[in-house]
Amino acid sequence: MIKTEHILDVKGLACPMPIVRTRKAMNDLLAGDVLEVLATDKGSTADIKAWAASSGHAYLGTETEQDVLHHFLKKDSANVIVKQEIPVVQLDTFMKKLEQESSLEIIDVREVEEYNEAHIPGAIHIALGEIETRMNELNKSKDLYLICQTGRRSGIAGIQLRENGFKKLYNVVPGMTEWTKQTKKGN
Amino acid sequence: MTVRIMKPAEVARYSIEKKPLFILDVRNEDAFADWKIEGESIEYLNIPYFDLLDGVDDIKGELPRDRDILVVCAKEGSSQMIAEMLSDEGMDVAYLEGGMKAWSEYLEPVKVGTLKSGGELYQFVRLGKGCLSYMVIDADKAAVIDATRMTDVFLDFAKEKGATIEHVFDTHLHADHISGGNVIAEATGATYYLPSQDAEEVVFDYKKLADGLRVTVGETSVEAVFSPGHTSGSTSFVVDEAYLLTGDILFIDSIGRPDLAGMADNWVGDLRTTLYNRYEQLSEELVVLPAHFMEMKEVNADGSVAKQLSVLFSENHGLQVEDENEFRVLVTENLPPQPNAYQEIRKTNMGVLTPDAETQREMEIGPNRCAVR
Image 1 (cartoon, rainbow over the protein chains, first blue to last red):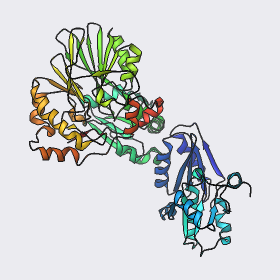
Image 2 (image 1 turned 90 degrees about the horizontal axis):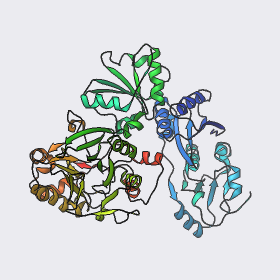
Image 3 (image 1 turned 60 degrees about the horizontal axis):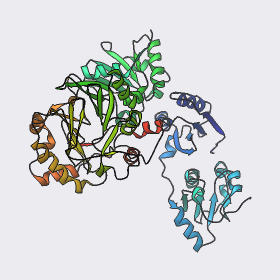
Image 4 (image 1 turned 120 degrees about the vertical axis):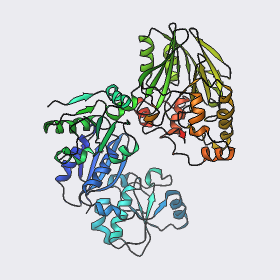
């Protein structure tokens, strides 16, 4: 199960410290655990990626928020990342599709606070960390549209779902950051 | 054993004088593949620092005992750590102060000639990126051509020589590195000259360069020769009737690429005319001083990058193509990849973008890719 509660803050530290600390933090985790590394050293992206590859961890991706880089690593899972991403549907295409067929199955995998702030009316909320335990609530025979803020988390969720036999999956990219149509607040 | 700190200026000596050096480059493999410290007498070992965190035992055997060892990384921190680990194991090593970041910004001033009036012509060799800038100094006056963004180097150098910078020229609007021209002109009150064809979107004040424009620095003449082809405004300079500053039109072993603004097909004719007609009309005795070099073998024993025009007419690969179609194919096909962030660099050189120093540094990362062979 993906856990995002493991967070390592190396903001303000310069090379080699982000990697030195990340390596130490990874030692304390279990195989399959996900570590989120917050860093400000711009060189850390290339190095984390290369380090993960050389040490057998999966580099899941990096998100940038303001000046902070959020690196996601999955321990001892280098093989997982080799699996192909699920198909992508562009946000504008998705918006048009939604206008024509109002009853699409949309899964919003962001955190509950983000979902409550604003979500697409009708979107089901299952946070990324809950996907594995709650995927039985989803219908394998239907087309499922996965969305998050930027498309990264929904991409990870998609890979997890596909590993569990879901086939009709679409990752909506870029995600809620560029959603311009009506939203709903609360749950 | 104490760890030595080596400054970029010292590394430059190894590179120019071909002194044996062993570089343990601890950046990640992609960064090393992209660019490194070049030198014909340098041997390399690339092992990322993060593969050495458990210890350096595995690589001790791979390090030579008979030459100096320099540990290099992107910004210094990792190389210092690895150098200390090696030192703890009894190895005598140094690390590069400021890392590749400092190397990229280091300029080696080389005197390329004494002018007729007794003045001097200096070339500033940016070894890490292959850029070349120039300063003409005569009778307390100076002119700077194709300055890089490390403007303090030029300002301090002129001050040391007791010279006032009165003229600042760029041979063209650069796309591979950020120009220091406007900053130097503002700091000194000098006139900044740019070819107007390249400067349509420039937002600051500049004086238009035109063919035949002649300024004097002390008693030394600097004359503009319109030589389009790399850009539509590219202009060369004849200094003291003895030196030909070719910008990005003609290099030592190659010629400029005309496509930086997506204009390869339109500019190839201009490039042909400049190289095969315009330059033919100049004195073959002129010493060519380009704005770039590509490989260390183009660097002379004294650290300069310079060669007589007559020699280039017989040896430069780009000047041996008699057939026009063949020439067209050479310069418009098989072009190397565009330099890193070249659109942003152009906009910065027009004054349209004003990125901070750190961003400017990142925009310039990587090798320059201005030439075709």
